[in-house]
Length: 259
Image (cartoon, rainbow, N blue to C red; front, side, top):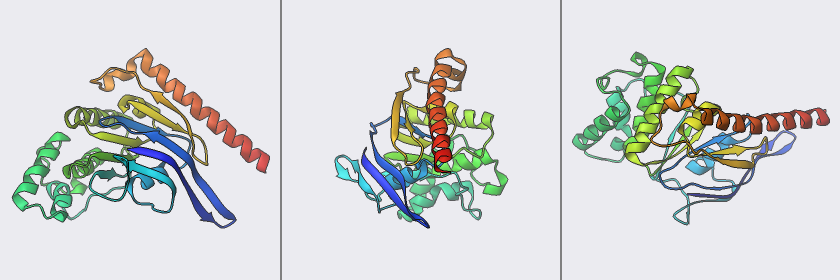
């Protein structure tokens, strides 16, 4: 996937608002990229463009050299609760396969496979309100994986979880990446999460969102949450934090000048 000079402008009460400006970066097959930046910098807008939920933007999103459009190569996982409360875990995970008219026997077998992959074996018949927050997000992840998208976009999917659960789910995402070799992009506010999971981190500026820099995460793979105690991990988190602090200070200075 290639993101080429993507821009997005919204209409506002006092004129138009430029949310994204000339965003460009490449996404290589099988890697995990995190997108991180100050609040309001357009991270979710960028993912909505990449996922086909927003059409009125400038620039291009290309897959294999062709302009991206909504199709089954792209899956999305959101921060908000997205499981159907009247469906069991198995029925929720099988839902996209049902929508694709895959025969019941085949879709149930595939749904069971991905439920096992995310560590929810034994909870197939539970309803969402019978699961913890972390388990519900794993069910949502299994559902997104079930139709085997080539690229998975995850927008703050673990934001509502406590830090320990986020680390454990991060381990599960890393294990899935190792097994499926799937391309994943993650929007997150968590510097630790970005460094734990990613091959590269795209740091955006304050609004309008532009690429400030792309940081290579040169930690060894296979990787787990054990890496968070290493000196190199701390150095990478510190480098990203320095960028974000600089952007926050610049935004405050612009606000004070405008007032």
